Image (cartoon, rainbow, N blue to C red; front, side, top):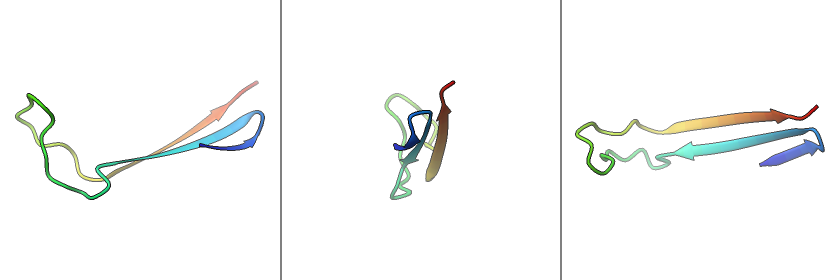
Amino acid sequence: AYQFNPRWQVTLGIENLLDLRYRPYSSGIAAAGRNVIVGLRAGF
């Protein structure tokens, strides 16, 4: 997370960074490919 100031914070997450094909435990469906998640948190 990166905090711009006491009120604003940005987070970044990456799922399946290597873009591998796999199935989560007990699931018959393959997981999604590479995903990037960006979040912004603001306090008032």
